[in-house]
Image 1 (cartoon, rainbow, N blue to C red):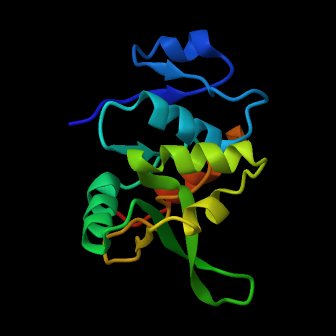
Image 2 (cartoon, rainbow, N blue to C red):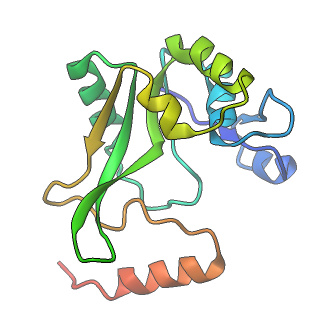
Length: 168
């Protein structure tokens, strides 16, 4: 079993209250999610690093298991989530959620070089690696699992959606 850590560059004292390691980016200017992944890979004690954004409280509890199984089956070094979404025209498509990912520590040098080149696009880097995309579109998968809650209004909207669900 792995351990939990928080990637943060602000409010470090507040996060420290959770009694888990808090890792700041090793790069200056905090260049985004990939810098947090790099920090995780620099600190990780295991072969794999699972990343989950803090603004998605309903992520699947079997996320690590499903990403790991697919990475093993595909012999890939990174696996990331995708979930169904209905676009403006009513078409249902799979939308990638690249920061819900499992990254092998062997990619640390690749990620460091990518960031050192000045690039920061998560999907661009992921797609350049031996990767797997894992669809969370099976019966029983929660359609709200990857919902973002960046504001108090987002959280209230999510809570309303949850309470409006039929009871099972």
